[in-house]
Length: 427
Image (tube, rainbow, N blue to C red; front, side, top):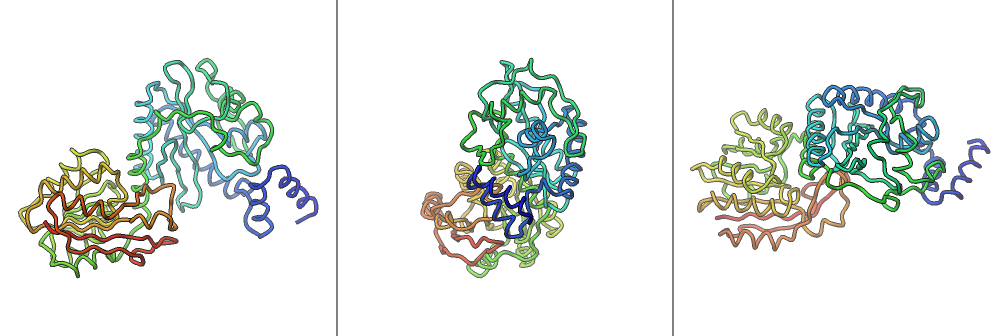
């Protein structure tokens, strides 16, 4: 590194503090710098931007333009911010009712996924990844409310409003050598997002501290963001062997003739149970997962159900799965991935159709897992459950506990080795 480069980094540290210091350590340790410095990264995100822009224009007739950090870089520096690590873009919905804004964005996200894009759900944006899932662009959505004020589900830090009269459409600019769209009144929008001091670089910027207001009524529903992300997960992940929980259950109880695999995923355990001679019915909220599962268990039956949709949807799915054959209701990694009310709805639905001799087997994250390392903490919804509450819920519904154990080492993956509870009960 040249003395001039080192001096500039040291000046950045003294002016900007801790966040710059971490970047300095990266540079001095030989780690890669900000992605904005990479021509390869720029080519990748520009390609994604073009493809997503074309798809959104076709589907909604909305222009996709730069927003947040990318727009700030375009207005202030003519390209990516020197410390930038992502690419932000957005569109303005034609709706003013946040309910319809949310429905439009949710439908768009799932349609992009159906068209082959790799899409993860967030409440205020979607992450759209490249084919190798190395990098992404973030697509946000904005809308004017009934008062004509532009609303930002992610939020803004400015103190002025952007009103409908300020919107003058979009224009094309050269951004790091690429023609992209920005709002025609881009400087005003940047001031709304970042406040009056936006022309002055702030390497310590923290949205958690700076954000002044957001529009939560326009946010994507959590259940839809989760379903979108699980759809994406099963597009790229498959498990070729049964889980340790399936092996545990088969060795702990005498299996009945049928299993309802609730939250069956890609069918790894359904395939195992089918090999033991059980009739398999699988329920999951990911069509991608069920497509894989149905191929692994040709004789099984599979149904799409979003367990967070409410009691009617869950009850209907469970009733449909009912059979005169004695049944094991099997839920691995299920309870901690659904809402509290959804857990109640699910157990009620099972209880309504279960007959004496039916069994229920549940594996879930316990309270002791809360402070352990987790993969993908921003994508995956998790609860950490007190097993005593589950035992009480089962007891109230006429179940007797057959096995109740807790521990680690049962399902390590990546940096995770979760603390799990396993409860098997018989009606």
